[in-house]
Every structure is written in structure tokens, then in C-alpha cells.
Length: 141
Picture 1: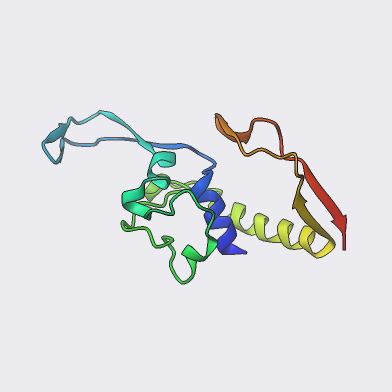
Picture 2: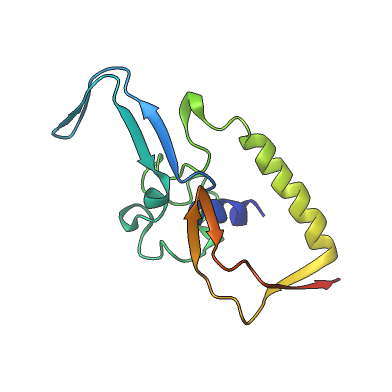
């Protein structure tokens, strides 16, 4: 269940970016980022970067998190669904626990399958959302 949650958060992070402010001048390659500069980190772009995740970057593969907290990403900071460092999302632990409790309660009682009419087309409006909803077929177990 954790693998699925991690892979969903990789493909569709709840926060599409992380923001930080440089506390001192920083050299990144040939570029100097001056003290006080606001920096936006494109989490969506990073989670879909072939150079970090490989050629199957856009495939839903929960097994990539088998025994690997970073999902097999080539850089330890390449997977940031809850941000990082001292400003990491304070709700991280709660969100993970809530996900596991709710999903296990629902999956014990119901099975889900996608409606044949579903067309995958996520859009961004503060967070990722399906443009036409997600028509599901729900059956009680």
C-alpha cells in the first residue's frame, strides 16, 4: 500500500513546487544565486525527469519503491512529495497514516475499476485534478 501511495505522489504530487530563500550567496555550476533570492523548485518536473527516473518515468510502477525510500531515483533529493528539510510539510506523518487507514477501510468493503469512458487528462489548478472527474465502477465485496 505504501508503494502505491509513493508512486501516486511521485506522478501527481499534492504540491507542485517547493519554495526556499537563499540565506547566503550560493554557487550552482556557473551561476551565483544571491542571498535573499526566492527559489522555486519544480517538484512535478523533477518527478517526471527521465535523467532521474529512467525511461519508464511516466509509467505507474509502484514496485520502484520496493526497498527504496527514494523510488530508485538517481538522486536522493529527486523525490519530494512533502518538501524537504526544516520546512517539510508538518502534515506528512498524518497524511500517510490517514491514507493507510482510509484505503484499508475502503478496500476491505469495495472493489474499484475504471469506467470504460474514463480518459486520462490531468490538469493543474493548485494541485493536479482530472479534467473530467474519474468515473469509477464501485462494487461491494
